[in-house]
Amino acid sequence: SKNILEVRDLKVSFRTYAGEVQAVRGVSFDLKKGEVLAIVGESGCGKSVTAQTIMRLIPTPPSMIKSGSIKFDGKTEITKISNREMEKIRGSEMGMIFQDPMTSLNPTMTIGKQIAEGLIKHQGLSASEARKRAVEILKMVGISNPEGRITQYPHEFSGGMRQRVMIAIALACNPKLLIADEPTTALDVTIQAQIIELMKKLSEQTEASIIVITHDLGVVAEMAQRVIVMYAGKVVEQGTVDELFYDSKHPYTWGLLRSVPRLDQDKDGELVPIPGTPPDLFAPPKGCAFAARCPYAMKACLEVDPEHTKLSETHSAACWLLHPDAPKVERPVEAGG
Ligand code: SF4
Ligand code: MG
Image 1 (cartoon, rainbow, N blue to C red):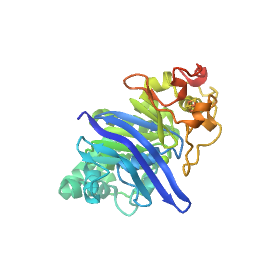
Image 2 (image 1 turned 90 degrees about the vertical axis):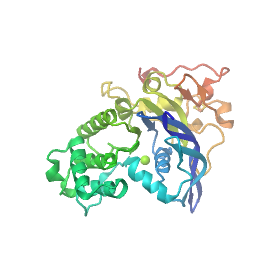
Image 3 (image 1 turned 120 degrees about the horizontal axis):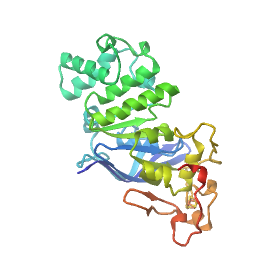
């Protein structure tokens, strides 16, 4: 298979005291080998839950995979395998980079040990081989004096350096899939740019496919080849980076593009936040979930949730404006392009 990942109609819910939250409501996408895919959307849109479900990092219960399939590397059905098999895959074929390295690193263990741990456990390396690999990988992520650094603890590293360590841990076992959830959000702007640069370089050097989850379209433009836009637990638009930035068709994507600063645009360009809030996922609306915030909403939008319309081999969007009988609307010019 040329796809490292095939996700089909994935539905994930959480049981809470107040009822069931439908966090992911039928998500489908492919990830090609070596590809960098961005998943964007506001907080609560289901992007992190999707990623954590792929890595089976959310506890079940209270979360439940209601339906759908996640096929990894053409053979493994992630929704079906045992916890033990999943743990093995996570230690050798998948890696995850989180937003806040301080909460995911062990404060009582040296950096060297934390990198070596997985290599010894999952790859059968000896302690000295693992140590050698740890030094190598720290060098690869741009940490100077790695021989000295491996005996240090997380608190002895700056925020940006800790994120490099997290990336080193995720990369140590040569994963086929790397998932980075808001990898730069907790960092200041110059460090953000350095981490993006590093991840870009590593994605070119290693064969790993990468899913980067972000609300930051600057990160998307810098790193990704393809983009999925999620809203209220569904994919509302997907396409190449060019299709999304210059030819997007979904009003929510237009709103996203206008609500964040663009790297290639001067900073005093007008930023317009999307008014309103996403729908309650205890009881999602029956029509288009964006209707309450959409300036173009029509009667049909409130009644029936639109299917995806295919716009090119790589581009599709779920919006009634793409129906042949819909009134023609112009994409707002300030949306970029
Ligand atoms: Fe707006 Fe209707 Fe398109 Fe939804 S389907 S984004 S409400 S125009
Ligand atoms: Mg998140």
